[in-house]
Amino acid sequence: MKFTKQLLASQPDLYHLATHAAFLDAAAKGTVPKATLGRWLANDRLYIHAYVKGAGRLLDLLDLPDLVNPDGPAATEERLLQWLVDALVNVRREEKFFVDVAAKFGIDVNLPALDSSSQGGLRVRSEEKIAGLRAFEKLFSRIGTGTTPPPTAAGVRRQDEPRQTLLPWLAPAVLFWATEKCYLEAWSGAKAAQEEGRDPAADADGGALRSEFIDNWSSAEFRDFVDQLGDIIDDGVEEAIRRHGVETLRDQEWTSETWKEVLVAEKDFWPQETE
Image (cartoon, rainbow, N blue to C red):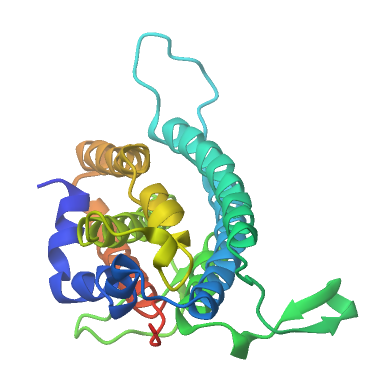
């Protein structure tokens, strides 16, 4: 079984909670108010900022080949590099899309902020952010630090500690794949649950979700993009197993913990209020 398939099968209950929520049901029905959607979009926009910084940290971890191999396939790190470049382009476009659609429908996408001259102007305090955003900020900031909270043999997580790894890119790549995969499946489910023939203009948000956002977040192009990263991860793990055998199992165990942490963060990203 492919490594990403193993991950998907490893936490079925938590994966369900990460991709199903009352907020998504309300989005499909058109009953999410503008204020609720605006707060969620504001958090999602700040998530993009953490995502961009995390991508930079992962880029720094890539061990790109010194020599050109014209007859062989691109190295895993080269493929991951190209995916990250495309991801950065995509999320910058996505942020502009957020702002433009919000303006079109009169939705405020700013959280309360305080002046922080030491950090360059107005900043959103941590307590104003939803738990899922705070979790993702920690996950993305941890990339490249050489630490991760692996479980002990008894299954009890220890404090963050330095570790050696054969595949320094693996856990961060799974972080990006996991969050994109959950987002895709969550909004694909919302799209499938929509009532046909109902005018989005009559929705509580004026139609922002059902006429703009949901289609964008469940598109075939987005699915191809997510699947591409999954293929890169699977191919990289298979290559590592061929080269190093069972030594790669430790990396896979640590990465499984990252998968679980992402699912918790995704679950906590959905708003509790829906109407």
